[in-house]
Image (tube, rainbow, N blue to C red):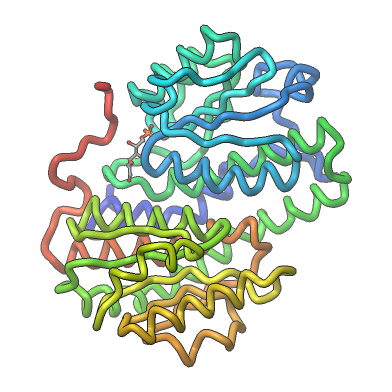
Length: 369
Ligand code: F6R
């Protein structure tokens, strides 16, 4: 059932082109109109919301962080992202114009379920993005948008994460369509870019050996840092989480702009630092700022490991290792840039002889608070 792969986790990483394609399937028509009739909340009610609060834990919360960039950009609706267990125990401000979007692979995470119940009591509308049909969180929510990643067996989430990000993009585009924030042609173009993602992920998977070689050479590392900016920031956080979970290596993700506010003090000779570099085609100066960050950490002895876009010639001179991912619009980049970091963690943990599917101290669904 592992389909010839040594672990479920590796199989699920390689399932990702299908996880994204299946989550997109049947959700728009040939004219690029989103058809999310399955949602169970009336379109007029959705169009009238004044803010979105995303509630989730762990990897699912990083999918929410990616969603914030996309939904705010496309829909001009404020999006807050909060860990379910933090939300529940303060006095959050929600009302009947608030759309709660919970994100959960299992649909059974107790922290998220309790947060959704609490928000519902306060009068908010609740939508669940979930990978498990008929599980508790979607059953208790007003609306549901299922991810179609298929069952995820490995404890560490991979294909569900990419499917969750994909589902939040669909939600963002649907809201933009309902509210008229984007022209139909723009939505159609973004859907076309999304449609190209599965083959681009495949392109990365076909070059997995480049990443595996690096991972095997780094099995003695005892700390790895991850830097990213804009949508690359949650990608960095997710890269670090994967490494902690399955390889038991101390790992931290940072927003690259925070470096000089503290974390740069951690850098000394030989410290491995992954840097997720924004596209050089972006309109603003983010690319050059992140390239400067690479130079800064390198000057202090870091071993710089770079994820950059195809054709980005600026990073080569400052990197010990570069992995190029195919071009895609910036907001969609996490669907590609995450994949090498998943492969890295999986291979490094395997090289250390760990059971990547069943990491110590962790359960697949956390059904206690
Ligand atoms: C990370 C991981 C966990 C889950 C978290 C939420 O690899 O698996 O961080 O993402 O426990 O689980 P769900 O999405 O089932 O609510």
